[in-house]
Image 1 (cartoon, rainbow, N blue to C red):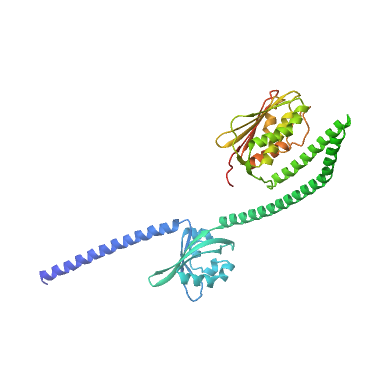
Image 2: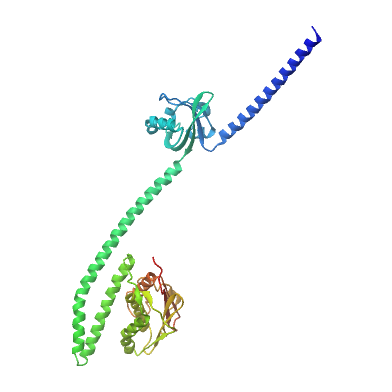
Length: 402
């Protein structure tokens, strides 16, 4: 054998060794990548299954699964392999098998909500992301499975909550409707005799000249007027509580409003030998508000001031404006109130229980607050026992459109 032949064989042997080394290196790299992706596959939070796909309508067998899938179904890895869709799908899902398969074939991927059954036969609602994949000439389906039991429970609780809310709303609306109907009927029944009583007492008070009959009749007429006002307030409160109290806003001359208030309240203060002073601090512009309702609030504040101020006391009505607001203040030097009393003052049916305090239903200030709130304004009070009270409200000159 020649040296040349020996050299050729040595070269072939060397190349063969190099090729084997490269194959071993490639195989090691391939094994390393496979282990890495297997690790990722097993540590995924969602269950993942790999099926062998069949277009013949046959169940798909499971050919691989991760740890999450084993936990999801309650099987060991070896038990899960070879099981088919018939073994893991709920009966309801099995009935949809043809529909789900056709959709997957048509689209290549799909996201569906179905139900699985675990090893114990329990149904588990799931969201599945299916995808057809092709490897080494085989068609397979990879399914990423997410347990949506908690989500379905929350959705059911939400539906039940919405249904309860709907029923409560319907009950409340029915009760409100019945209350409004009752209040209207009550007001009608009370107003009917009051109307004739008002007319008759007014006529008699003008025609009776002899004392003490004239004084008696005037007192009766004033009492009937007060009762008529209280009935109107009750109806307004019912409207306010049910959202039916409405404003009729229009351009308003504040001077005319204060003049009207003064004429109405003048006899009250004169009979109590009390002094009412109206102080206008700066020019008052034409504003947009409900004339009738604002008059109702101011009269209520002045009437309270008269009731809670001693004979011969002083009451001041101040009006001013700034760039945006009308500010009305009613100040008296009467009995005053404690901090506890003022904290509840604008609540419905809140009134003083102190001995010697005027009686009433405690709705006037609550109604006043409702009216000021509807004007997008604010009402507040400052008071101290023995030093009188100051009620202040402010409303926009031009309310925002709602």
